[in-house]
Amino acid sequence: LRSIGTYQQAGENSEAYFAGITNDVTEQKEDEQRKNDFIGMVSHELKTPLTSLTAIVQVANTKLKNSEDPFLAGAMGKANQQVKRMATMINGFLNVSRLESAKLLIDKKEFDLHDLVEEVVKEIAFTASTHTIKYNLCDHIMINADADKIGSVLTNLISNAIKYSPKGKDVEIKCGIENNKAVVSVTDEGIGLSPEDQAKVFDRYFRVESNNTRHISGFGIGLYLSAEIIRRHDGEIGVKSESGHGSTFYFSLPLV
Ligand code: ADP
Image 1 (spheres, rainbow, N blue to C red):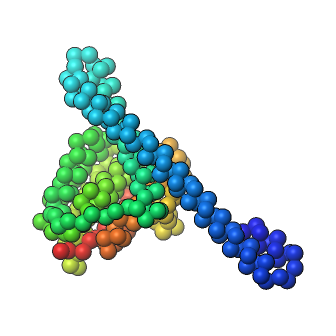
Image 2 (image 1 turned 45 degrees about the vertical axis):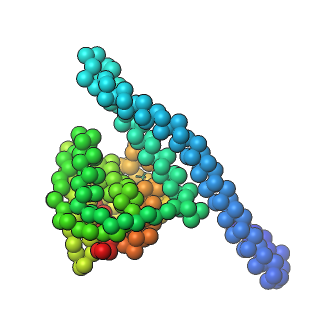
């Protein structure tokens, strides 16, 4: 936008004024496109070696978790967790790049939300030793959606609930039908969000900057992707929260 000022000072030429704005917007778009292509390319290249590494570490972990050598048993468990974390990040970047270039495909099929929620909660509860995961058994609810993508939304909300609340706190997952829609919610007893931050948490690359969050790693893409995925299913996503008093993130989806 610097060029707008330059053109205005140069004279009363309104054509030059508009050309300045147009050039800037085009340049900015090209910049974003280049950045997006680069992110897409790097994550795509990293995905292949990471997939084989994940498989090797998983097998090694299964073989060594009962090893008599406590170092080996512990180290492989940690390696397994970290490799999974890395895979989630790379997938996130790949999906942002696909989303920006309109290549994020949604593959809808009818399935029971009950089964998906249970699967995701079980998987997370298995590894989350620092928090108590409470799950109010979901009704049987048929929806027409991309199960993998909805699963990644729920995984993201539960991981955030754990990440942004102190050890020893509860994370509660609820699921049911409200106003003729399937609704899933994740409630934590964590740091919460101010009204200003609540308005921005679904923006791309947004992260709250505070002493509470500075030491927590992340890129601010999980909620952005989640919101886009839910929007592509004609659903709604939102948050109710109070600073210092926890948050409830929820999403709704149309019933079949
Ligand atoms: P990331 O966690 O990788 O930064 P997200 O897009 O998942 O990215 O979240 C964006 C930001 O929203 C986070 O950086 C954090 O500041 C805030 N946030 C997300 N979930 C919660 C939560 N349950 N409680 C408090 N803050 C949250």
